Amino acid sequence: MTNKTILVTGGAGYIGSHVVKLLGERNEKIVVLDDLSTGYADAVLHGELVVGKTGDMDLVENLVKQHDIDAVIHFAAHAVVPESVENPLKYYANNTCSTRNLLEVCQNNKIKHFIFSSTAAAYGNINSDKPCDESLQTAPINPYGTSKLMSEAMLADVSKATELKHVILRYFNVAGSDPDGRIGQSTKNATLLIKVAAEVALKKREQLYVFGTDYPTPDGTGVRDYIHVSDLATAHLASLDYLRNGGESTLMNCGYGHGFSVKEVIDSVNRVHGSPIKVVEQPRRAGDPASLVAAVEKIHNTLDWTPQYDDLDKIVETSLNWEKILLERQHNQS
Image (cartoon, rainbow, N blue to C red; front, top):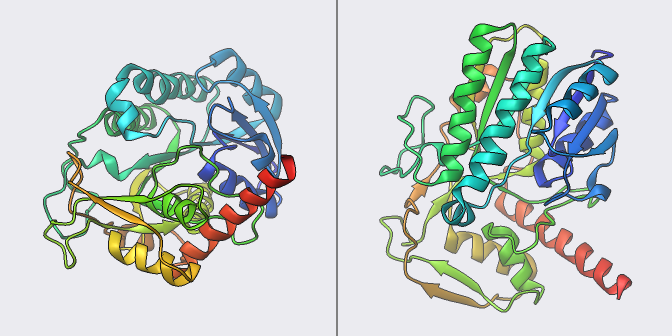
């Protein structure tokens, strides 16, 4: 534990808010920087929220000096793959250029520790049913993945040139919500399967579209490694502890190391919800790999991290519970 402050960019968003909750629960000093374009002020349960942009160097410089910041956990990014294809410059501006500005402030102020939220999209189109190893060649197939990979490269280069040490976590499919029900996945028009399926179960959407039923997988639907957001959050705290204890810069996958198919997810939603949701089958989408599962030996060998929610029904249950909370809030407001 240290009396220094942690800057969490994008800390009002889905994953960032879960990390802020855990940091606050262990009495860390936190400043959250978020422009609230997709985040929510009421999701920031601890620390001070500053509304602004990560790429605003003067603002970030002032925060670093004012709060004696020595660690940055960087989530702030656009993260919708189809939108990145339609509007690539939006993604390079926010995800890559803003990260570059943030890193310059870190360099100028001798920030010691940096944890970066990256993505399995950096690997690109995986043509293998084997888990993705960190040594795999990276070949992203969309601007979202490329924008994150470029940030990884900048961070690695800055770490070589300065005293900054970093952990890059490549997330797989993040799902679920805080088991306490205080925060959750509130993104409007979300595209994440479990979130969408939960919305269909609660009649917020009419149906769930399944894209592709002819993949070379056991049941023909795509297989993904779904990690509960609270386990992902604890991996960030374990990464911070690793760096504080003198750990060297590193890059790791963050998943469970096994996958579930789209049909298995739908079966889980039906089971937990208690009645079947409406599903419409569609052709495959371009660029969707048949299977995407994390190789997780490295993260388990590097960090003191033990997942607590590696259970599909539990992930689905926390998602459904959060959708019920959101519905209740809507009713109370109307």
